[in-house]
Image 1 (cartoon, helix red, strand yellow):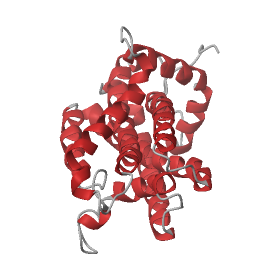
Image 2 (cartoon, one colour):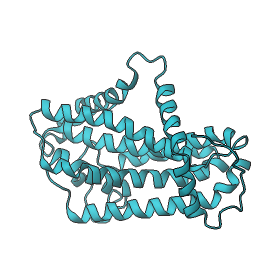
Image 3 (cartoon, helix red, strand yellow):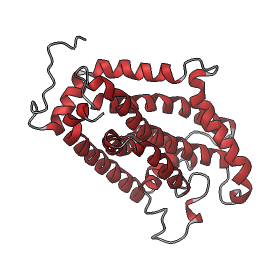
Length: 273
């Protein structure tokens, strides 16, 4: 695909919200190449390569199982499946949102030289995270088979729960990337905030461990995303309808809000990075 005779003009699109979508579609081949670059660069000179995307959740599950399984063994049978299914969703959220910032900062050097739709770097972050998620899911399915828990027809809901997680994650990533272009400290601050958010999300403990309808956990939007994703793997059924609806609503709101914030500032990004 040739990228010629294109002039960057901040006033070219009267509607940046939809205009950026059109530009992203035009540069879809570039996004594909950037995703491949991202994956190859990340695991360059690594002994295990992309297998690390499978080893990371496995090792973290083993660690949490060794430390916390005796505390929650009675309330959480098949503790390893519970932890791994939640941790994979959490890791996808953090990787996507963090990569959106780092890719946007990295791509800023190109924006000053050639025309590239800024959203291409955000799409790269999401695409790479989906690839990593695919390998992690292979490890999770293997664990479910090994533990004898069995696979459920509820897993057919996986594309929907993954779509919800992706929409929410990239929505948050769009907002963070917009902030990071102006304040690169956002990347470090998000890392600290995400660490705290991790302990408010029921990854290695049951949701009932924090009582009260207005607990901080239930005010945590990631809780609904994780539960929607984990239920088919761990419980063999869909999450309660209320949780799914809240998760879907949060995903739509995050995506629309993130895209609106990002596209309003996209024309200024070549001058800020």
